Length: 313
Image (cartoon, rainbow, N blue to C red; front, side, top):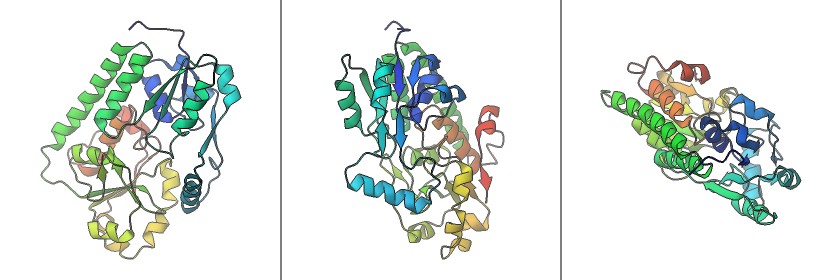
């Protein structure tokens, strides 16, 4: 497929924006979602989505309740700026069907696209594994006429994954690592995250490999006896997640968890890394590897160290 420099792309989710940028096609982006913030230059792009509670600073429990109420009422969490989108006249719109919480619902996007005189191609990303993420990168590259760039990018990402896998394979222990995607209420990890823990040399006794994360009880966390606890709340950076630490500290038996006793509770930027199924998912793996096996991964690549905000609590 030959590159078409005239393609105009709208991305409705941060991971898709990062994929397009990593392919060297940032200039093709004519519109992004309200949550797209990386790389920095995309912050100058028009915002084509809106969320009523974005940036409101609500407590986590209220965010969860609002999301549940909206979904129960079959209402979308996001609104599309249809007029702006029409003016932008995209050739390609990249969205997702994986999670109702992460982007405008797919039906709304396709309905809007079909209403245009020249309907754009709608590309939906729905990864549940590392292989799916790499497949999505290749698919976006192919749709945008840059198949070779997609192949090269995925090859480089896979090489980094294999470096972690081979290094972690010599570890003498496989610590129990509970990765939480939300604190109030508690949600375990899902989709690709348990796979990342496995590759990094650990096991997640609560994780749902290839499946959506679900609500769990504190007793489940306590009974899992995590040796390492990673807090990477979906959509939150490390500073925001730290605000919810007091909720965990108030739980019965918190101080008896092996991870707490050994000071191996880590707060990481879930928004930038673990929640985004794009190129930086490999950065997420490298972060995990150092947290699980610092004796083997004492020196992360400089690019990862500069982007990571991990703090022992």
